[in-house]
Amino acid sequence: MSARLPNRPGEDAIASKGWLPAHKWLLLRRVSQLGILALFMLSPWLAAWIGNGKQPGSALTDPALTNTGSLAGFQPEAALSSVSTAASTDSLWIIKGNLSSSLILDVVPLTDPYIFLQVLATGFLPAATAIIGALIVMVFYLLVGGRVFCSWVCPVNMLTDAAAWLRRRLNIKANHALPANTRYWFLGGTFIAAALTGTLAMEWINPVSITHRGLFFGMGAGLWILVAVFLYDLLVASRGWCGHLCPMGAFYSLLGKTALLRVAAPRRDACDDCMDCFAVCPEPQVIRPALKKMGQDSPVILDSRCTNCGRCIDVCSKQVFRLTHRFDQRSSS
Amino acid sequence: MSTDKPAEQSRPEKPKTSPGRRKFLSGMAGAAGCGCLMALGVGVYSHQASALAALALRPPGALPEAEFLAACTRCGLCVRDCPPGILKLAAPGDPVPTGTPYFTARTGPCEMCPDIPCIRNCPTGALDPKLEDINEARMGLAVLIDQETCIAFLGLRCEICHNVCPVSAEKTTADGQVERIKAITLEKRHNPRSDKHAMLLPTVHSDLCTGCGLCEKACILAESAIRVLPPALAQGRIGEHYLKGWEEKEKHGGSLIGPQQEFEVRGLEGRAYGDTRVYDGPPPRLDDLADPPDPEFFNGPAPGSEP
Image (cartoon, rainbow over all chains, first blue to last red; front, side, top):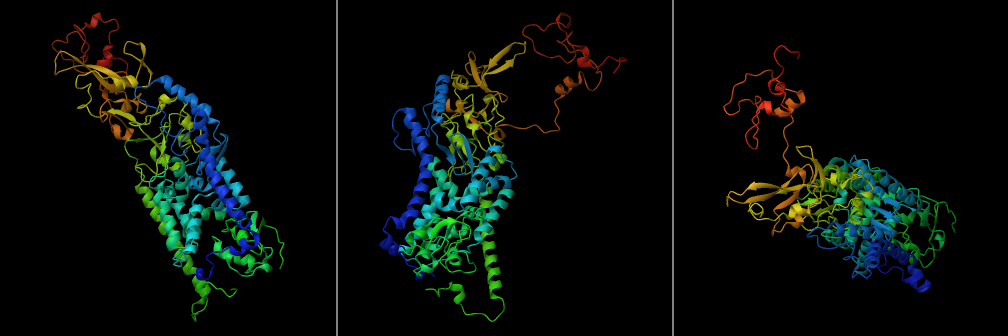
């Protein structure tokens, strides 16, 4: 199937719309993904900058993260002064923690609902902060679409998008993808594993949390997990991780079953079957029902595996797609 | 292009009925198999990699390790809130369960901030918010693990582990006085090698030590002679059936086995039976003691009295 897909999708769109409009949603997503990373990263940088009165060399390696000084000969005064410095730098955190749990401006707690449910699966009842945090995140994704996490927040998405891009460019056709439903079984299995081992078993290898945590707290051998995901997506299976295996994506897809925000194909009669949208779509099977009226009349992409990434809107030279709400039935045909 | 079909459908059709159902079932079985296999791998791996290296210590207030691994979301808020910045989140490959917070006493001990900021923002309670006094924290237990190299045991005066110990606890001495002591005290012993000097030996009090690790960090040796270990590694445990006779006697208020035959012991004449304590100077006569021990304490109730 991939053989028939264009390996440079979007060229028609660039020609007819211009480069920028043909990359609008892609750029917005990158801004979102990098912006979220920046918010987590900016805070230690700012804290160090203002706290030390000088610019740190690197937000990743420096300040607030490294040991402040020698402890040989413990001095209570030194300890107390470092405590008060920390108190004054506390307010500079826009968001701290990582995607597993975080705190916005020292007030609003956020907890990843998938990780929260793993905690529950172990039999541990977490404190109220985690429950509130998980509810906030859950309500957000219930509204905007579960897999908005995947395409707008998750840092691994940039890696797998890169693998998919390279795969098209190198015209790699070998595709040994596991069944696309594997992720749901895997998802269920991770909860059972958590229950049986009494730990958040998946968090030992979860590339999503390992990446995000690693960027701020040290990657270690986690780098090799990312290399493995990249190579698997590039050489073994097209969209192999995000589209077939990732239990986090599976979880968010279930969460987004009834999401309000959706991509639709209102101008589907203008489609000239160029296949560009299928070539760029990370979940190509979701487009057909809406675009070709396969089993549904609505022009809205209702499949919860759609990540609302909007790349189909970008690459379509006929402006078939648009981002809209679930109940938008406007259609040219 | 509109005739494009998935590769599976272009296979020659089999004459049997319901190929769609068969395809669905075999696809589902494949997905189930793969998914469960991966989850199994994850479970086995995480179970095997759950061990915590002996020198990795959890932040103050951490729940017992098994519970901690269930509760901790690996978010790093404690790391962010640690003023001296000694906490780390374990990266894959570290000898600590991935993503969980720990510190290493020798390189960065806990400075025991009085307000315990690392606990404040823990979302799940993996770091127990009920810990309000840092002196009640039990991150580990310092053990003077090598008396062969500790220079105090070589007869030199070092005392650095005692000096840096941040614990200051009230303790009632034998004569009723309240004094403040550290979790590491120096105990005076005769130095048998020189036979004329004293040795001041660092001694950890397990009921006071928080396991902060400042002593391990401060030890002047190339490899520290004092180390903070998880309590389970550092301490023994008496079997539940074991009773200490003297404690039972105290609880009971006297001998549990009734009056005992007294035998005069040469040199202990005049002292209550069983009182073999060593006194500075000549042992006081029973009659001379301001507060003589109750004879019944040692001998049980006198014959004929009410039980």
